[in-house]
Length: 252
Image 1 (spheres, rainbow, N blue to C red):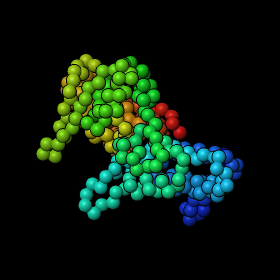
Image 2: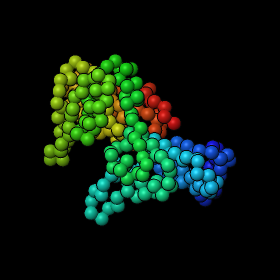
Image 3: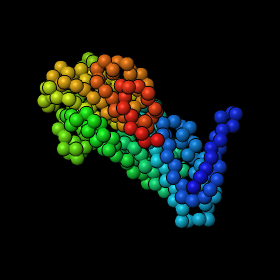
Image 4: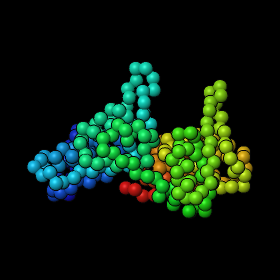
């Protein structure tokens, strides 16, 4: 199936179906505009296929916007991920694939959804480094990192972060002395937590620190990370990064 997207001078997005058939859309999904483009394409496709029950529509979201807003944090605030997922559900895709969502809440809120694993990308980083120790940065990341460690036959060191008088305190539960370490997580916005974790690992004797995140946002704090971490691995799910300090695996 082929389609085209156009934009009017006022910013309005419009879609047109050029050739009918099964619909397969892949988007970064890191902006509301991405989602609106997908909705416009799906609406046009629905109109073209209203009498054809044999066609299938799938949507792949590589970096779901608002995925960290997976609960109502404070009284009176909006539950942003719920709003976003309702918009996605209203498109009525037959299947929706989401690359390494921040939590299971995303998949619970999106109908007909399925997770795309980040295992292959972690494996690429793992092999390029040369079998480092995997480090889970917090309790939330431990389960998925533990599953990956088993599949890679890799050692795993859990860590956790608590705040004492407003300052982060990192605890590391394992031996990293003279070892290369690969921190594995879903996304990096500013990277402050990874900076503190890398410093803690070095204090425990780690020889080199590497970071893998599926979604490399790096909206701030990027230069600070360079002083704490030897190299970063990520996909280009959020944006393309041209920096020799980063190895990106192409997903779009």
